[in-house]
Amino acid sequence: MDFDFTQEQRLLRDTVRDFAQQEVAPVAEELDREKRFPYEIVAKLGELGLMGIPFPEEYGGGGSDTLSYALAVEELTRVDSSVAITLAAHTSLGTMPIHLWGTDEQKREWLPELCSGRKLAAFGLTEPEAGSDAGNTRTRATLEDGEWTIDGAKQFITNAGTDISGCVTITAVTGESNGSREISNLIVPNGAPGYELGEPYRKMGWNASDTRPLTFDGCRVPESNLLGRRGDGFKQFMQILDGGRVGVAAMGVGLAQGALDEALAYAKERHAFGQPISSFQAIQGKIADLSAEIEAARLLTYKAALLKDRGEPFTLTAAQAKLKTGRLAVRATEEAVQIHGGYGYIEEYPVCRFYRDAKILTIGEGTDEVQQMVIARQLGC
Ligand code: CAA
Image 1 (cartoon, rainbow, N blue to C red):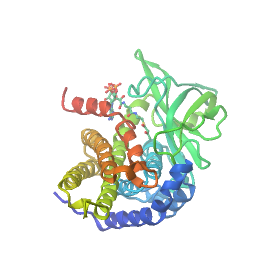
Image 2: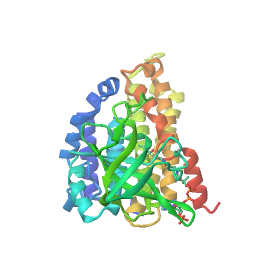
Image 3: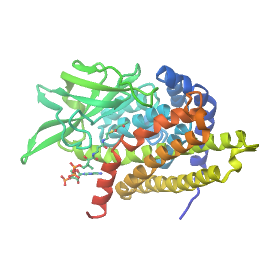
Image 4: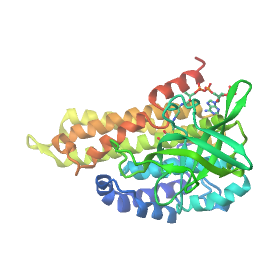
Protein backbone atom coordinates (compact mmCIF):
# COMPACT_ATOMS: atom_id res chain seq x y z
CA MET A 1 0.00 0.00 0.00
CA ASP A 2 1.17 3.47 -0.85
CA PHE A 3 0.46 6.05 1.87
CA ASP A 4 2.19 8.87 -0.02
CA PHE A 5 0.49 11.71 -1.80
CA THR A 6 1.65 12.72 -5.25
CA GLN A 7 3.45 16.04 -5.51
CA GLU A 8 0.29 17.60 -7.02
CA GLN A 9 -1.89 16.31 -4.20
CA ARG A 10 0.51 17.67 -1.57
CA LEU A 11 0.70 21.02 -3.33
CA LEU A 12 -3.07 21.28 -3.55
CA ARG A 13 -3.52 20.34 0.12
CA ASP A 14 -0.96 22.94 1.22
CA THR A 15 -2.50 25.62 -1.01
CA VAL A 16 -5.95 25.02 0.45
CA ARG A 17 -4.55 24.83 4.00
CA ASP A 18 -2.87 28.24 3.60
CA PHE A 19 -5.94 29.73 1.96
CA ALA A 20 -8.19 28.37 4.74
CA GLN A 21 -5.95 29.78 7.46
CA GLN A 22 -5.31 33.15 5.87
CA GLU A 23 -8.54 33.96 4.05
CA VAL A 24 -11.32 31.87 5.58
CA ALA A 25 -10.55 31.49 9.30
CA PRO A 26 -10.45 35.26 10.00
CA VAL A 27 -14.00 35.79 8.65
CA ALA A 28 -15.65 32.47 9.55
CA GLU A 29 -17.21 33.62 12.83
CA GLU A 30 -18.60 36.81 11.26
CA LEU A 31 -20.07 35.01 8.23
CA ASP A 32 -21.72 32.48 10.54
CA ARG A 33 -23.09 35.15 12.88
CA GLU A 34 -24.46 37.25 10.02
CA LYS A 35 -25.62 34.16 8.09
CA ARG A 36 -23.90 35.72 5.07
CA PHE A 37 -23.04 33.69 1.98
CA PRO A 38 -19.25 33.77 1.35
CA TYR A 39 -19.28 35.31 -2.15
CA GLU A 40 -15.74 36.72 -1.93
CA ILE A 41 -14.34 33.39 -0.75
CA VAL A 42 -16.10 31.44 -3.51
CA ALA A 43 -14.69 33.88 -6.08
CA LYS A 44 -11.18 33.35 -4.70
CA LEU A 45 -11.65 29.56 -4.64
CA GLY A 46 -12.62 29.88 -8.30
CA GLU A 47 -9.49 31.91 -9.08
CA LEU A 48 -7.38 29.23 -7.39
CA GLY A 49 -8.98 26.58 -9.63
CA LEU A 50 -10.69 24.86 -6.68
CA MET A 51 -14.33 25.00 -7.81
CA GLY A 52 -13.85 22.26 -10.41
CA ILE A 53 -11.04 20.07 -9.05
CA PRO A 54 -12.05 16.68 -10.55
CA PHE A 55 -13.34 17.93 -13.92
CA PRO A 56 -11.48 17.89 -17.26
CA GLU A 57 -9.18 20.78 -18.05
CA GLU A 58 -10.77 21.19 -21.48
CA TYR A 59 -13.90 22.47 -19.68
CA GLY A 60 -11.95 24.63 -17.25
CA GLY A 61 -11.67 22.02 -14.49
CA GLY A 62 -8.58 21.06 -12.53
CA GLY A 63 -8.16 17.68 -14.27
CA SER A 64 -7.43 16.22 -10.86
CA ASP A 65 -8.73 13.27 -8.83
CA THR A 66 -11.18 12.47 -6.03
CA LEU A 67 -8.43 12.27 -3.41
CA SER A 68 -7.32 15.84 -4.23
CA TYR A 69 -10.93 16.96 -3.99
CA ALA A 70 -11.29 15.22 -0.59
CA LEU A 71 -8.10 16.89 0.66
CA ALA A 72 -9.44 20.32 -0.32
CA VAL A 73 -12.77 19.65 1.41
CA GLU A 74 -10.99 18.38 4.55
CA GLU A 75 -8.75 21.46 4.80
CA LEU A 76 -11.63 23.90 4.35
CA THR A 77 -13.81 22.12 6.93
CA ARG A 78 -10.98 22.36 9.43
CA VAL A 79 -11.84 26.05 9.69
CA ASP A 80 -15.29 26.57 8.12
CA SER A 81 -17.96 23.98 7.32
CA SER A 82 -20.19 26.47 5.46
CA VAL A 83 -17.49 27.21 2.90
CA ALA A 84 -16.65 23.50 2.63
CA ILE A 85 -20.23 22.37 1.99
CA THR A 86 -20.65 25.13 -0.60
CA LEU A 87 -17.67 23.75 -2.53
CA ALA A 88 -18.60 20.09 -1.88
CA ALA A 89 -22.27 20.36 -2.89
CA HIS A 90 -21.28 22.38 -5.96
CA THR A 91 -18.63 19.87 -7.05
CA SER A 92 -19.70 16.34 -6.23
CA LEU A 93 -23.48 16.83 -6.24
CA GLY A 94 -24.31 19.75 -8.54
CA THR A 95 -21.67 19.66 -11.28
CA MET A 96 -20.77 15.95 -11.29
CA PRO A 97 -24.01 14.75 -13.00
CA ILE A 98 -23.36 17.15 -15.90
CA HIS A 99 -19.76 15.91 -16.14
CA LEU A 100 -20.80 12.24 -16.05
CA TRP A 101 -23.94 12.24 -18.19
CA GLY A 102 -24.08 15.58 -19.97
CA THR A 103 -24.01 15.73 -23.76
CA ASP A 104 -21.14 17.67 -25.33
CA GLU A 105 -23.48 20.58 -25.73
CA GLN A 106 -24.60 20.48 -22.06
CA LYS A 107 -21.00 20.25 -20.92
CA ARG A 108 -19.94 23.18 -23.10
CA GLU A 109 -22.89 25.20 -21.85
CA TRP A 110 -22.38 24.56 -18.12
CA LEU A 111 -18.97 23.22 -17.12
CA PRO A 112 -16.72 26.23 -17.86
CA GLU A 113 -18.92 28.59 -15.83
CA LEU A 114 -19.33 26.06 -13.00
CA CYS A 115 -15.65 25.06 -12.85
CA SER A 116 -14.60 28.70 -12.65
CA GLY A 117 -16.93 29.32 -9.69
CA ARG A 118 -18.64 32.14 -11.59
CA LYS A 119 -21.77 30.02 -11.30
CA LEU A 120 -22.85 27.48 -8.68
CA ALA A 121 -24.65 24.18 -9.20
CA ALA A 122 -27.18 22.54 -6.89
CA PHE A 123 -28.54 18.98 -6.61
CA GLY A 124 -32.28 18.47 -6.22
CA LEU A 125 -33.12 14.99 -4.96
CA THR A 126 -34.75 15.40 -1.54
CA GLU A 127 -38.46 16.18 -1.33
CA PRO A 128 -40.93 16.56 1.53
CA GLU A 129 -41.89 12.89 1.05
CA ALA A 130 -38.62 11.63 -0.40
CA GLY A 131 -35.74 11.94 2.07
CA SER A 132 -34.19 8.62 3.05
CA ASP A 133 -36.71 6.98 0.70
CA ALA A 134 -35.18 8.87 -2.20
CA GLY A 135 -37.06 6.84 -4.83
CA ASN A 136 -40.41 8.17 -3.60
CA THR A 137 -40.06 11.26 -5.81
CA ARG A 138 -43.34 13.12 -6.35
CA THR A 139 -42.01 15.80 -8.69
CA ARG A 140 -43.31 15.09 -12.20
CA ALA A 141 -42.12 16.20 -15.60
CA THR A 142 -44.16 15.80 -18.78
CA LEU A 143 -42.83 16.22 -22.28
CA GLU A 144 -44.94 18.14 -24.77
CA ASP A 145 -44.06 20.09 -27.89
CA GLY A 146 -40.32 19.92 -27.20
CA GLU A 147 -40.55 21.13 -23.59
CA TRP A 148 -40.63 19.51 -20.17
CA THR A 149 -43.23 20.90 -17.79
CA ILE A 150 -42.19 20.28 -14.19
CA ASP A 151 -44.46 20.31 -11.13
CA GLY A 152 -43.34 19.52 -7.62
CA ALA A 153 -41.09 20.57 -4.78
CA LYS A 154 -37.60 19.89 -3.43
CA GLN A 155 -36.26 20.66 0.01
CA PHE A 156 -33.01 21.11 1.96
CA ILE A 157 -31.23 22.13 -1.26
CA THR A 158 -27.74 23.65 -1.03
CA ASN A 159 -26.50 26.40 -3.41
CA ALA A 160 -29.74 26.93 -5.37
CA GLY A 161 -30.60 30.45 -4.22
CA THR A 162 -27.44 32.57 -4.27
CA ASP A 163 -26.81 35.47 -6.65
CA ILE A 164 -24.45 33.21 -8.61
CA SER A 165 -26.57 30.02 -8.66
CA GLY A 166 -26.66 28.74 -12.23
CA CYS A 167 -28.73 25.57 -12.21
CA VAL A 168 -30.10 22.66 -10.24
CA THR A 169 -30.07 19.08 -11.50
CA ILE A 170 -33.27 17.35 -10.31
CA THR A 171 -34.98 13.98 -10.30
CA ALA A 172 -38.52 13.86 -11.64
CA VAL A 173 -41.01 11.13 -12.53
CA THR A 174 -41.26 11.20 -16.32
CA GLY A 175 -43.59 8.25 -16.84
CA GLU A 176 -44.31 4.62 -16.01
CA SER A 177 -42.51 1.61 -17.42
CA ASN A 178 -43.15 -2.07 -16.56
CA GLY A 179 -45.46 -1.02 -13.74
CA SER A 180 -42.83 1.08 -11.96
CA ARG A 181 -42.26 4.80 -12.04
CA GLU A 182 -39.70 6.08 -14.50
CA ILE A 183 -37.38 8.63 -12.88
CA SER A 184 -35.20 10.91 -15.00
CA ASN A 185 -32.84 13.80 -14.37
CA LEU A 186 -33.28 17.30 -15.72
CA ILE A 187 -31.17 20.44 -15.65
CA VAL A 188 -33.23 23.40 -14.48
CA PRO A 189 -31.50 26.77 -14.93
CA ASN A 190 -32.11 29.55 -12.40
CA GLY A 191 -34.64 31.92 -13.88
CA ALA A 192 -36.58 29.19 -15.76
CA PRO A 193 -40.27 30.17 -15.81
CA GLY A 194 -42.14 28.49 -12.92
CA TYR A 195 -38.96 27.68 -10.95
CA GLU A 196 -39.29 29.41 -7.59
CA LEU A 197 -36.87 29.67 -4.69
CA GLY A 198 -38.21 29.43 -1.14
CA GLU A 199 -36.91 31.41 1.83
CA PRO A 200 -33.63 30.13 3.34
CA TYR A 201 -34.02 27.83 6.35
CA ARG A 202 -33.04 28.95 9.85
CA LYS A 203 -30.51 26.20 10.60
CA MET A 204 -28.58 24.92 13.62
CA GLY A 205 -25.30 25.30 11.74
CA TRP A 206 -23.78 25.73 8.27
CA ASN A 207 -25.14 29.24 8.67
CA ALA A 208 -23.15 30.87 5.89
CA SER A 209 -24.22 28.29 3.30
CA ASP A 210 -27.37 28.62 1.20
CA THR A 211 -30.08 26.02 1.96
CA ARG A 212 -33.72 26.42 0.93
CA PRO A 213 -36.78 24.67 -0.52
CA LEU A 214 -37.59 24.90 -4.23
CA THR A 215 -40.91 24.73 -6.04
CA PHE A 216 -41.68 23.95 -9.66
CA ASP A 217 -45.06 25.26 -10.71
CA GLY A 218 -45.60 24.50 -14.38
CA CYS A 219 -41.86 25.11 -14.77
CA ARG A 220 -40.76 24.79 -18.40
CA VAL A 221 -37.36 23.74 -19.70
CA PRO A 222 -36.34 22.56 -23.20
CA GLU A 223 -36.47 18.83 -24.03
CA SER A 224 -32.68 18.96 -24.42
CA ASN A 225 -32.30 19.57 -20.65
CA LEU A 226 -32.82 15.84 -20.00
CA LEU A 227 -29.58 14.68 -18.34
CA GLY A 228 -28.51 11.17 -19.32
CA ARG A 229 -30.92 8.51 -20.50
CA ARG A 230 -34.61 8.81 -19.74
CA GLY A 231 -35.43 6.44 -16.83
CA ASP A 232 -31.86 6.27 -15.51
CA GLY A 233 -32.35 9.12 -13.05
CA PHE A 234 -32.55 7.20 -9.76
CA LYS A 235 -29.49 5.06 -10.42
CA GLN A 236 -27.56 8.09 -11.66
CA PHE A 237 -28.32 9.99 -8.47
CA MET A 238 -27.47 6.98 -6.27
CA GLN A 239 -24.09 6.92 -8.02
CA ILE A 240 -23.70 10.65 -7.39
CA LEU A 241 -24.46 10.14 -3.70
CA ASP A 242 -21.69 7.52 -3.45
CA GLY A 243 -19.18 10.14 -4.59
CA GLY A 244 -20.83 12.85 -2.49
CA ARG A 245 -20.37 10.67 0.57
CA VAL A 246 -16.60 10.70 0.07
CA GLY A 247 -16.76 14.51 0.20
CA VAL A 248 -18.96 14.52 3.31
CA ALA A 249 -16.66 11.99 4.97
CA ALA A 250 -13.77 14.39 4.26
CA MET A 251 -15.84 17.07 5.96
CA GLY A 252 -16.16 14.85 9.05
CA VAL A 253 -12.40 14.29 9.15
CA GLY A 254 -11.69 18.00 8.67
CA LEU A 255 -14.16 19.11 11.31
CA ALA A 256 -12.89 16.58 13.86
CA GLN A 257 -9.31 17.66 13.10
CA GLY A 258 -10.25 21.34 13.44
CA ALA A 259 -11.85 20.61 16.81
CA LEU A 260 -8.74 18.74 17.96
CA ASP A 261 -6.47 21.57 16.73
CA GLU A 262 -8.44 24.09 18.80
CA ALA A 263 -8.71 21.83 21.86
CA LEU A 264 -5.00 21.04 21.89
CA ALA A 265 -3.95 24.69 21.53
CA TYR A 266 -6.36 25.71 24.29
CA ALA A 267 -5.28 22.89 26.61
CA LYS A 268 -1.64 24.00 26.35
CA GLU A 269 -2.53 27.62 27.10
CA ARG A 270 -5.17 27.26 29.81
CA HIS A 271 -3.86 26.84 33.35
CA ALA A 272 -5.72 25.29 36.28
CA PHE A 273 -4.36 24.16 39.62
CA GLY A 274 -1.07 25.80 38.68
CA GLN A 275 -0.48 23.79 35.50
CA PRO A 276 -1.55 23.82 31.84
CA ILE A 277 -4.60 21.57 31.62
CA SER A 278 -2.79 19.56 28.86
CA SER A 279 -0.69 18.05 31.65
CA PHE A 280 -3.75 16.36 33.21
CA GLN A 281 -4.40 12.75 32.24
CA ALA A 282 -8.14 13.32 31.86
CA ILE A 283 -7.45 15.88 29.10
CA GLN A 284 -4.61 13.84 27.58
CA GLY A 285 -6.90 10.82 27.31
CA LYS A 286 -9.46 12.79 25.28
CA ILE A 287 -6.80 14.28 23.01
CA ALA A 288 -5.02 10.96 22.45
CA ASP A 289 -8.27 9.09 21.69
CA LEU A 290 -9.40 11.74 19.23
CA SER A 291 -6.08 11.83 17.41
CA ALA A 292 -6.12 8.03 16.97
CA GLU A 293 -9.73 7.97 15.79
CA ILE A 294 -9.24 10.86 13.39
CA GLU A 295 -6.25 9.17 11.77
CA ALA A 296 -8.22 5.94 11.32
CA ALA A 297 -11.22 7.79 9.87
CA ARG A 298 -8.93 9.78 7.57
CA LEU A 299 -7.39 6.61 6.13
CA LEU A 300 -10.84 5.10 5.54
CA THR A 301 -11.93 8.26 3.74
CA TYR A 302 -8.81 8.35 1.57
CA LYS A 303 -9.33 4.67 0.75
CA ALA A 304 -12.86 5.43 -0.52
CA ALA A 305 -11.42 8.26 -2.66
CA LEU A 306 -8.63 6.03 -4.01
CA LEU A 307 -11.05 3.22 -4.91
CA LYS A 308 -13.19 5.71 -6.81
CA ASP A 309 -10.14 7.07 -8.62
CA ARG A 310 -9.09 3.54 -9.61
CA GLY A 311 -12.54 2.84 -11.01
CA GLU A 312 -13.16 0.09 -8.44
CA PRO A 313 -16.43 -0.39 -6.51
CA PHE A 314 -16.48 2.10 -3.63
CA THR A 315 -20.15 2.22 -2.48
CA LEU A 316 -19.35 0.17 0.65
CA THR A 317 -16.22 2.09 1.65
CA ALA A 318 -17.84 5.49 1.01
CA ALA A 319 -20.80 4.55 3.25
CA GLN A 320 -18.46 3.21 5.96
CA ALA A 321 -16.40 6.40 5.82
CA LYS A 322 -19.49 8.63 5.93
CA LEU A 323 -20.89 6.67 8.92
CA LYS A 324 -17.63 6.69 10.84
CA THR A 325 -16.66 10.32 10.23
CA GLY A 326 -20.05 11.91 10.93
CA ARG A 327 -20.22 10.30 14.34
CA LEU A 328 -16.60 11.14 15.01
CA ALA A 329 -17.15 14.82 14.14
CA VAL A 330 -20.04 15.01 16.62
CA ARG A 331 -17.95 13.40 19.35
CA ALA A 332 -14.78 15.36 18.61
CA THR A 333 -16.54 18.72 18.63
CA GLU A 334 -18.31 17.83 21.87
CA GLU A 335 -15.01 16.87 23.51
CA ALA A 336 -13.41 20.07 22.20
CA VAL A 337 -16.17 22.13 23.81
CA GLN A 338 -15.71 20.14 27.03
CA ILE A 339 -11.98 20.83 27.06
CA HIS A 340 -12.70 24.55 26.61
CA GLY A 341 -15.09 24.47 29.59
CA GLY A 342 -17.38 27.52 29.75
CA TYR A 343 -15.49 29.25 26.93
CA GLY A 344 -16.52 26.44 24.60
CA TYR A 345 -20.12 27.56 25.01
CA ILE A 346 -19.28 31.09 23.82
CA GLU A 347 -19.53 31.92 20.12
CA GLU A 348 -16.17 33.73 19.94
CA TYR A 349 -14.49 30.34 20.26
CA PRO A 350 -14.54 28.34 16.99
CA VAL A 351 -15.40 25.07 18.80
CA CYS A 352 -18.82 26.50 19.66
CA ARG A 353 -19.61 26.86 15.93
CA PHE A 354 -17.92 23.52 15.16
CA TYR A 355 -20.26 21.78 17.63
CA ARG A 356 -23.34 23.23 15.88
CA ASP A 357 -21.91 22.41 12.45
CA ALA A 358 -21.19 18.77 13.29
CA LYS A 359 -24.67 17.30 13.73
CA ILE A 360 -25.73 17.55 10.09
CA LEU A 361 -22.89 15.21 9.15
CA THR A 362 -24.88 12.30 10.60
CA ILE A 363 -27.91 13.32 8.51
CA GLY A 364 -27.05 15.00 5.17
CA GLU A 365 -26.23 12.95 2.07
CA GLY A 366 -27.82 9.95 3.74
CA THR A 367 -28.48 9.52 7.45
CA ASP A 368 -26.40 7.17 9.58
CA GLU A 369 -29.31 4.73 9.33
CA VAL A 370 -29.20 4.88 5.52
CA GLN A 371 -25.42 4.27 5.59
CA GLN A 372 -26.09 1.23 7.79
CA MET A 373 -28.63 -0.01 5.21
CA VAL A 374 -26.18 0.51 2.36
CA ILE A 375 -23.35 -1.21 4.26
CA ALA A 376 -25.51 -4.15 5.35
CA ARG A 377 -26.83 -4.66 1.80
CA GLN A 378 -23.29 -4.50 0.41
CA LEU A 379 -22.31 -7.19 2.92
CA GLY A 380 -25.10 -9.41 1.61
CA CYS A 381 -27.86 -8.83 4.19
N1 CAA B 1 -25.13 3.05 -7.55
C1 CAA B 1 -25.79 2.66 -8.67
N2 CAA B 1 -27.04 2.11 -8.62
C2 CAA B 1 -27.60 1.94 -7.41
C3 CAA B 1 -26.96 2.32 -6.21
C4 CAA B 1 -25.68 2.88 -6.32
N3 CAA B 1 -25.02 3.26 -5.24
N4 CAA B 1 -27.77 2.04 -5.17
C5 CAA B 1 -28.88 1.49 -5.69
N5 CAA B 1 -28.78 1.42 -7.05
C6 CAA B 1 -29.74 0.86 -7.98
C7 CAA B 1 -30.07 -0.58 -7.60
O1 CAA B 1 -29.15 -1.48 -8.18
C8 CAA B 1 -31.45 -0.78 -8.12
O2 CAA B 1 -31.39 -1.08 -9.49
P1 CAA B 1 -32.38 -2.20 -10.13
O3 CAA B 1 -33.75 -1.65 -9.99
O4 CAA B 1 -31.92 -2.33 -11.56
O5 CAA B 1 -32.17 -3.46 -9.32
C9 CAA B 1 -32.08 0.62 -7.96
O6 CAA B 1 -30.98 1.55 -7.88
C10 CAA B 1 -32.92 0.73 -6.71
O7 CAA B 1 -32.08 0.37 -5.63
P2 CAA B 1 -32.65 -0.03 -4.20
O8 CAA B 1 -33.74 -1.06 -4.36
O9 CAA B 1 -31.50 -0.36 -3.33
O10 CAA B 1 -33.31 1.36 -3.75
P3 CAA B 1 -34.10 1.71 -2.43
O11 CAA B 1 -35.33 2.43 -2.84
O12 CAA B 1 -34.22 0.52 -1.54
O13 CAA B 1 -33.18 2.85 -1.76
C11 CAA B 1 -31.36 3.77 -0.47
C12 CAA B 1 -31.88 2.67 -1.40
C13 CAA B 1 -29.90 3.38 -0.27
C14 CAA B 1 -32.06 3.80 0.87
C15 CAA B 1 -31.48 5.12 -1.17
O14 CAA B 1 -32.81 5.54 -1.29
C16 CAA B 1 -30.70 6.21 -0.44
O15 CAA B 1 -29.47 6.32 -0.60
N6 CAA B 1 -31.40 7.05 0.34
C17 CAA B 1 -30.77 8.20 1.00
C18 CAA B 1 -30.85 9.40 0.10
C19 CAA B 1 -29.86 10.43 0.48
O16 CAA B 1 -28.68 10.17 0.75
N7 CAA B 1 -30.31 11.67 0.44
C20 CAA B 1 -29.44 12.81 0.68
C21 CAA B 1 -29.68 13.83 -0.40
S1 CAA B 1 -28.41 14.94 -0.80
C22 CAA B 1 -28.09 15.89 0.49
O17 CAA B 1 -28.34 15.54 1.61
C23 CAA B 1 -27.44 17.19 0.14
C24 CAA B 1 -26.80 17.88 1.28
O18 CAA B 1 -26.93 17.60 2.44
C25 CAA B 1 -25.93 19.00 0.99
